[in-house]
Length: 55
Image (cartoon, rainbow, N blue to C red; front, side, top):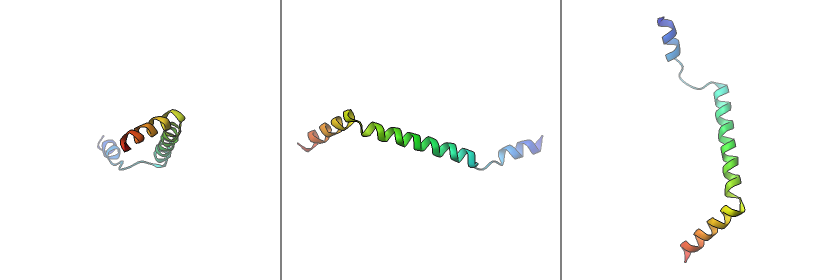
């Protein structure tokens, strides 16, 4: 029983598959964020906010 708990506690980091899934999730989120920020509605809203701030 002692060996099992030692082995489970000894996992210090992510393995390659976890890095791949994490990287894929980060890239997907970045792509979605880019798509939202470059949409016409968001561009118009951001331009309006900047125009009001500069007046």
